[in-house]
Image (tube, rainbow, N blue to C red):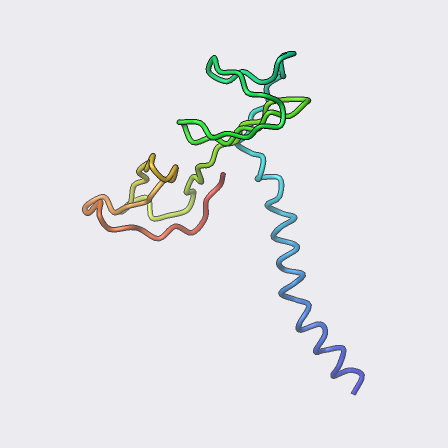
Amino acid sequence: MQSLFNGLIRHRMRPLLLSFSILALFWPLCDAQCSRTPVSENGCIKRGKLHHVHTVWRTNNCERCECKPEAMVCCSRVLTPTKYNREKCIPMFHKPTCSIRVVKKNNPSAFCRVFSAVG
C-alpha cells in the first residue's frame, strides 16, 4: 500500500516539477528584450515626453515602459517566432496587435504553425 501511495504521488508530481523546470529555464528570457535608461531629476523622458515616476505607458513601437525611481524600463511587447517552417513560411509584422504572424509564402492569408518564440 505504501509503495502504491508513493508511486501515485511521484506520478502526480511530475507535471508540477516539469512546469517549474520550464519556468526556471525560461525565466531569464523574460527580460531579454528590455532596456534600462537612467531617470532624470524630473522623471523619465521618452521621445521628448516627460513621464512621472511610477507611471506605465505603451509606445507606438510596441513597447511597455515603466518609470521607476531607479530607471526607466522599456520592454518589447512583440514575441519573435524562432521555430517554424522557413522554406514555406515567412514572418510578417502586424502593428495593430504588436505581433509577428507567420504566414505561407504562397498564400499570406494562411497561417503557419509556430513551435517556439522569444520575447
